[in-house]
Length: 158
Image (tube, rainbow, N blue to C red; front, top):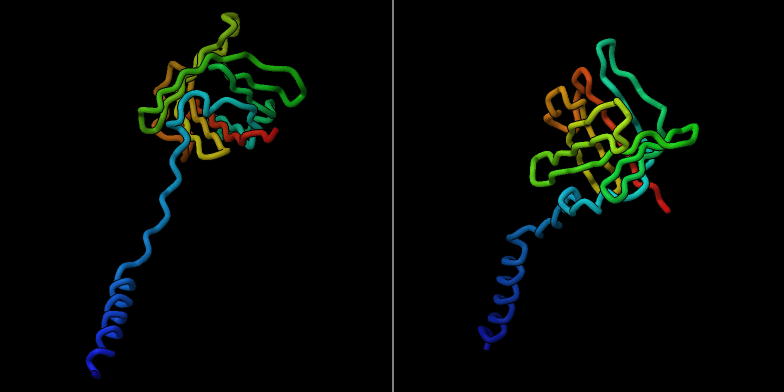
């Protein structure tokens, strides 16, 4: 009679020990948005920072307050009002890091094409690029090489 009562308790302890032997599974890491397609970049972006590394050092640029990305176009909006040149953008999310190429869309502006890399994480977009005559940056973060630009943007809330 005594063994009949011990059996359920033994099974209960065995089950409790087995369930505590393995730690809980951690939650899945959020998926990077960069692979979501071209429309993932569409929207109005507030400029958090815009920097340029040149021969004399790092320069913080404050000309632009926003960037508007829509239908494959990148338009920089001046802090004092008005828009800068429109760039046609193409990107390749199959590369690591994803690449972005920007060509002046108006055909008159002589600022040249840009070649760069980007990272989109939620509501934050970071783009690092250089002029076409230089090698494409290898990474989005880190110290900028001479002639490189970095934009850190946050999606503007409607």
